Image (cartoon, rainbow, N blue to C red; front, side, top):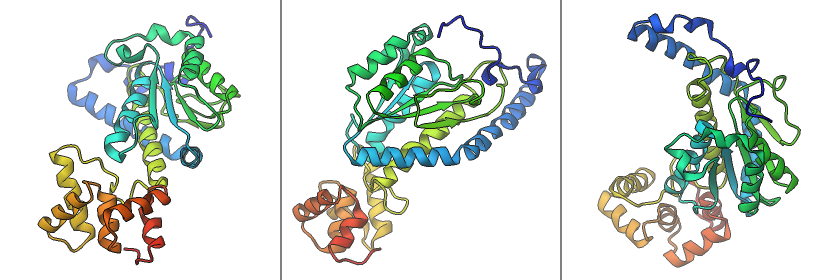
Length: 308
């Protein structure tokens, strides 16, 4: 699709009647207007709940079978994908290649606008080849207006390679329809306060959707116990303190006892909990977790210990 194609009909490009006098508003009036409009992002997520749930289920299943999750986008959409991917390793202790963000223009586009590069569908397809996308992988194409050639090219190539494809856009299917996606997520937030500036409501709704998608997938992969990040990567003082608090909250240990247990488990919270609740040594506990793909609840059950 040409970058000069008419896009004025798209929902993301339309003029918001509530902000026609934006340049005449006081600061407080602008804050109130933004707050009022941003409420539509929550409604948009609610309307897409079924599709988001399907994306979680399909992605978790793919990753359990050795697949990977890729976010593909340009501009704001690409940056949001890269951000979500980058936060998975420190939050869920995932390997860096499990969830990856691909942005048109590469790393330089994260800090400097390179939107012109989004017009090349062949570059999106080449990115799929470069990352050796297979039928085990999941590719999430993110484009607020739905027409970004880079994203469409990537999704087409991913589909041809047999990957599970997910589309996230902020326009209705009647305006932009793709036949190469397995899950079609539409976040209909309406026209932006600043006409066409999709870093606003569209960007916020996209961030919410990606938060839900990645966190939901990690829960299904056993990275969470209850609502605790038991696969937290203990890499700094803040995370060390969080790890200790998780251990104390889920056990009857004092802080000193929790510290000893955390060190005995090589600072692995999930392993520490398994050792405490089953009486297993670290090596056996590590093997048991591996046998159950890191799922703590399943490992506890296999050891015959009561579920906490």
